[in-house]
Length: 207
Image 1: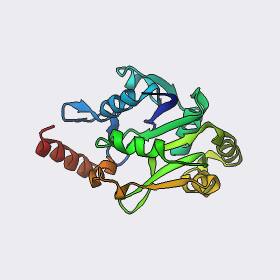
Image 2: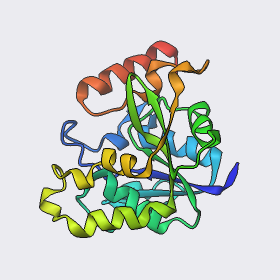
Image 3: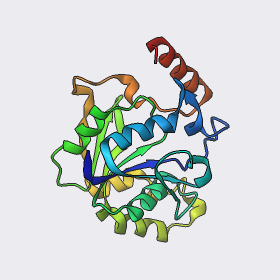
Image 4: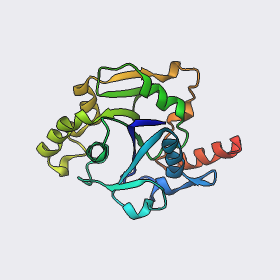
């Protein structure tokens, strides 16, 4: 177990395409966020959930923190998580990755890196979550948050995770080359069709 890294679960999305809180959907007899929580608590001694609805996740044995700047998307969640964390290094994951595993996370954590961000490349593209983010990023993020009006947060590139990754010169780990890699690892839950595919996968695997 890693004592020097805080696990941070982002659960602040509006789930507009799903029409309900996707993190609370049940697959294989367990909520999606419950699966993520089990994974994170098996790895990290300290874990946080960042959300806009603290009551919804009160059933989980983790510290629940409300977004400092609601409505600013993943970057706002990262800012809140890093602000509330007591460790320099932080493994941040989204709440909608039911197939994520320990091997991927440890691959990211153990990658040699001079950068404050370590991410994975998988499924042919950069994956922001799970990712290792340093608390030292806070000044960069805060500068973006205070100089950009919330109303333009969705479209403004200064609040883009790509911009943060560029500024931090992130280290990218190609996990597709790892022996444990499976395309389902980064399959995230956004739509009802995604949920149907995930439920079928769990059923077919007998999970």
